[in-house]
Image (cartoon, rainbow, N blue to C red):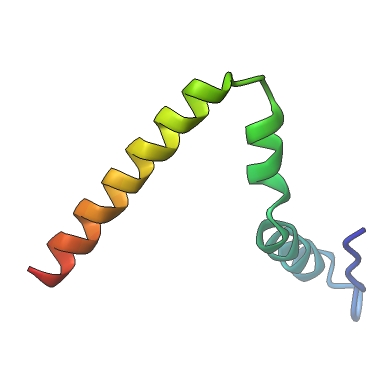
Length: 63
C-alpha cells in the first residue's frame, strides 16, 4: 500500500508525490497488462516487436 503524508495542508503536493510513487511501483502498467487476456503467442509476438523497436532505437543512437 502506497502512503503519502500531507504536510502543512498541501494536498496538491501530496497528490503529486502519491502519483509519482504509484507510477514508480509499476501498478498502472501491470493493470494495463492484466486488463485483458493475451494468448502466449500474441505475447511473444509483442515482445519480439518491442525488442526490435528497442534495437533500432539503440542502433540509431550509436550510428
